[in-house]
Image (cartoon, rainbow, N blue to C red):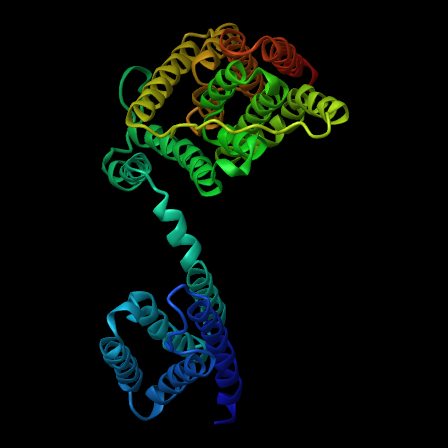
Length: 418
């Protein structure tokens, strides 16, 4: 029995933490104070779980299951007795049962798992009101985006075969779709962050997450906005620069996930490419005019559409075939960089992930793979500068053409400097 002292104390502490956040959430809810159990109740439940696991090993094997059943019945009866306006949902029921099981995990010495479950319960309970407020802002387009992301990741991926097909065995449906999932996931998280923060987050934060979601869409949106509100063209120019810099960070992270060595090799040249934007930002900071507003961020559409996903998959497959072809035919060094340039004009993610992918490891030398990514990045910067010039205000045209022009030049220079 003395061995039970520490598990009981730990269980009581973890249960008290859950009860604390449960009690705080109930007391601060708009519905008013409703007694659904607090620090004491949840501490008792965790202790019950600990003792049920302990006695189940020596006296009554089914004791823990009985305790879980009793707590569940108690919750159902308590909920049924409450008036409809204050009747709790399934969160209270689940948190009570999980707290009992946390006590059992502590006794079984799965204490890291117990701490993780406790932290998860606390976070989800504490975020009840913010999550409800956020989901109320969801539009049908947001729900379609979520369902499309679930379909891309959880439905289609398990169904595609993991086998090489076609000439040069250049097409592997599973690997292609896995990279679609990777880039869609990064873009979807950026879009969710923008929706969570809302328009009030301001131009700079919107441009940062917009660059993670789709730097091209962000460039188009802010360029058009500068023509509608030319007074704030410099702010919108900075937003475009931030979005393009965020795109470099996004590509670096995605490449590093697949090929850490190539990811490390891209850090210095990507930093060089980001330097013109950083200097431009510093120049704007020192010349800023007090009292001048920061403007309103434009609405950026969800980048995760079925058309976009299929276009990326097709582009990746075509570029993968071309890389395999020029490798097999002995034209790798002469043809890869031009291919990267034209690929970057459409989407630099495809060539970047292809260079990082396992199918070209050992075929494309590391330095040449880095050069291919940098050429694509330079090409992508030039095409975005073209968008800004064609759609933006005179000030934005002038400043973006200089900054992104220098960014593209830095990318080309990085091919030979690093």
